[in-house]
Image 1 (cartoon, rainbow, N blue to C red):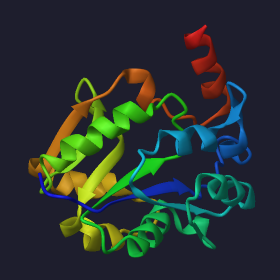
Image 2: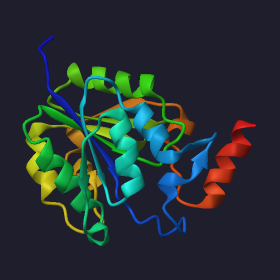
Image 3: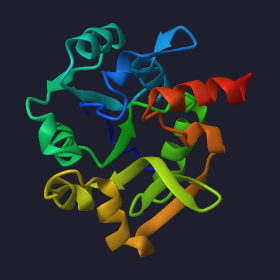
Length: 193
C-alpha cells in the first residue's frame, strides 16, 4: 500500500448560536468538548485547527496542533473549510472533523482513515445505518470544489454531487451524535447513565 500524506482539519470556529455560548468549552465528563475532539484525531495526520477562540488555540498547543484564526466565522462553515484546505493543499487527502461529537472514538476514526487508504479515489464518510455524518475524508481531487463552497454550506454539498464516489463506513450511532444545544449535552449524559 502506497504512503499517503493525510491532513486533518478540525473545524472549531462556529458561533454556537443554538448553544447560546461557545459550546466547545462546555464540559462533558469533566473535559471541554474541544478536548474530546482533539483526542479523537488519529496520530500521524497533519492536523490543523481552524478556530476563532483563544481557549481553543491554547488547547491545540498542548496537542502540538497548529491553528488558523478564522476572523470571519459569520461567513459560515465554508470559510473554515477553505482556510483548512488551503493550509493542507499539498496533502493527498484531508479528513474533516467537527468539534462537537464527544462520543467519537479515535479507533473508529483511525479505521475510517485506513479504509480511505484502500479507496484513495473515493470520499470515505462515517455513517450509521446509511445515514451520513462526520467525519469525512476527501481525496485531493475535491479540494478545489471544497474551497469554492460559499456561506454555511459544507462538505455535504460536495458529497451530494458525487454520490457515486462515496464509500460509507459504519459507526456506532452515539459516536456521530453532535451537540448543538445544552439539552443535547444533557441528553447524551442521560443515555450514558
